[in-house]
Amino acid sequence: MSSTDPVVFWDGVYAARTAAADPRPNARLTEIVTELDPPVGDALDLGCGEGGDALWLARRGWRVTAVDISAVAVERLTALARAHGLADRIAAARHDLAASFPEGAFDLVSAHYLHTPLDLDRAAVLGRAARALRPGGRLLVVDHGSTAPWSWNQDPDVRYAPPREVAAGLGLDPAAWTVERADAPRRTATGPDGDTAEVTDHVLIVRRAA
Image 1 (cartoon, rainbow, N blue to C red):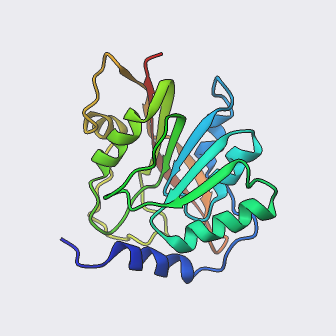
Image 2: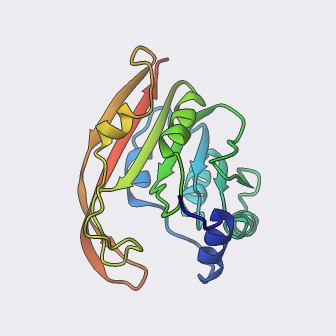
């Protein structure tokens, strides 16, 4: 068990970064959500980080609840939402998902790269996210499937669970939730310093029965 306080850890991660004026959304989010039907609704962004995904969704008309364990990240996103005229579409709040979960029902729950070097029962968090979906809603989980050169985790023995294994760990009734997609596409990614590399994403989409 790690003795590091996760709030202190993640506040330190974000405080050490220069705040982005208009952070980029994740590539898989823009690719997948653009093709969704219905095209807008209520979205929950788990681990919102710099806020690029929440801003992108709000610009497309989604009403976004964005949560992160870091108060630094939440405060920055709140300020960005105001600066970009999206304060009426983005509600940012601090949640330690190991202890609390945002209330409400959602048409989309997005969990992009919800990885941490600290202790977290991720399966429990994602299972709760699936249960927060409205009928017909989708849980989109995008995980690392390979190690990028700029990743904080360079452990050569790290194992990336495949999407169907992640789905199986959620404990969902297959009569009520369907795996719509579970694959490992590759793409060319750009790191924080502008370097590029081919990476693998693990993509899982689970839909609640209508």
